[in-house]
Image (cartoon, rainbow, N blue to C red):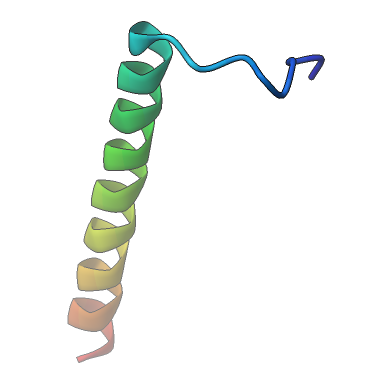
Length: 40
């Protein structure tokens, strides 16, 4: 990780980061619902 601190992320990097964050949130929500459904 040798990124310069003053370098701003490009639009492509921001879009990729947003997609990754969205997928993580969706997986977390699905896992929580499945866990509650199995526990209940």
